[in-house]
Amino acid sequence: MAQSYKFLRASVTVFKVLAWVTVAVQVITGLMLIIGGGEPVLIGGVEIPARLVGVLNFVAAGVYFFSLWLMSSLLRLLLDVRDRLPG
Image (cartoon, rainbow, N blue to C red):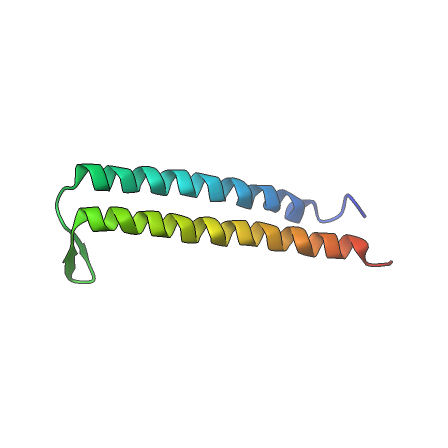
């Protein structure tokens, strides 16, 4: 049974890598917006200061990281349960 579901087993690693890459990109983008400031960003017809958007990038980084890591853990759990089933 160890060789079955190779795609799902590989996707566990892919989700973990995507989680770390997402955090890195979001944090770098957030720092650039916080340090650089710049023009207000138009979101939904409302001008939001660029520094606030930088802070929101940090929040989004946490949410995306948690979501991707949770997906990875959930797939790992389901694969472990599948391996323990008889038959």
